[in-house]
Picture 1 (cartoon, rainbow, N blue to C red):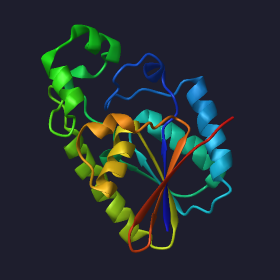
Picture 2: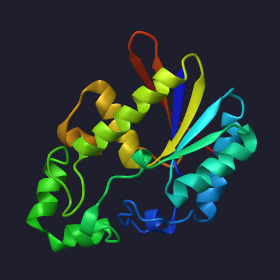
Picture 3: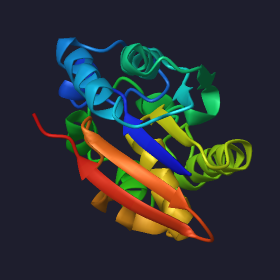
Picture 4: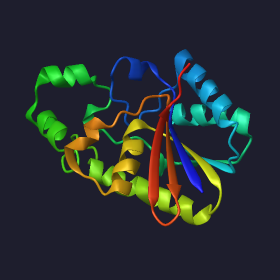
Length: 196
């Protein structure tokens, strides 16, 4: 079996570098176009189900892709983006300019430090790994598509590699990245970038 994981399409907040966290923002035109391209490419693979974050931008992406796949879709809050707490709605540039001590600590150690009122990367990883394990148990020998967000996708990779710490910032998950997680006796992770 293989789990294919994609990030939702672009939103205006993505374009502006604003932490969306668990806010319900919708796709912009570019995001809808990317979702269509992903749908066309992924339609060449036989999927049996889609699991998606229940946030609007992921739901829209899943629905557009599913117009090409026509399979059951399951929406899960466990696949939501990292909870950025009071940093939700603030841009990365404003956070950098403010030069706060907590922001610096979080950049240094997102595994153990959380945004105020938010969650750590460790908590996010624990949440999404449970979902992956459940999918592997429930859908043996099936191909499953997961639609989520950059944070949870990085957390899946980290969790499967038993990684921790600052390397979180070294993984790039664009709106055109497809992460493929295969499992036989162990996990194998591949990443491809869908180009125009």
